[in-house]
Image 1: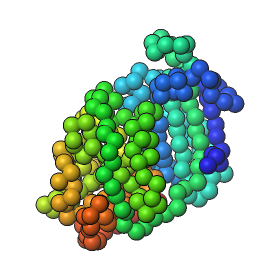
Image 2: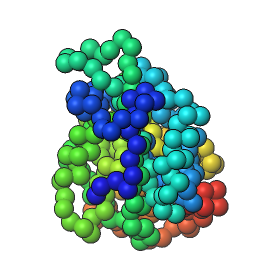
Image 3: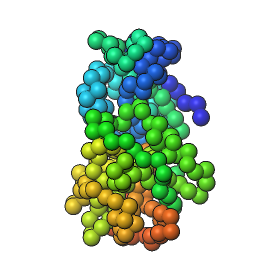
Length: 271
């Protein structure tokens, strides 16, 4: 689906299109943020910019000035639907052939506005993916542009009744879903996979870890997930989504999960 609106910049200069020599196109050399828009604003804007800045620092890509970026995003959102999605892509910019990055990069920034996905309130049906995530500590946690693993995993099924797939890393540890983080309720506490070697540290995941007493990271195996008392996926666009089925395992609604979703709605009314 085409974007509702798009703004592209080289540095701070507005340009009509990305340069074909952009390293984001050639090598996936960059980062992105996918943000919920509600009432013409992004509820977790500061958290998204914080993650973007951390990722850019780790990759050595100059970060856009926060005040300038806020003005440009607000201009794009001025005519946005009440509920929408804002995507931000930041690349290292134009570079010659070869992997060596330019010494003085001029980043490319793409802001695009998209319709909000159709709301889904019912419990999710999940499957285990065959695709494994590679171990790469230098990229772990970042929302970088290299998403071929997720593309291959999502291509494993074409059943509309199957909503998402869970991925293991190369060591057999549970990491995430193709487009969300996962939490398991075990022994009265919420646990989510530690992401030291693979996966994306999601914004909604960060909210749960910061706001729910006892929630913490842990090394989780498939057996831990399948024996959990409750399970949910979360991301910054859809919020918290309860899981009802994973393969042959089924979960009934759980009061701890219901309370968590109510708490998120109180804190972030967009959800």
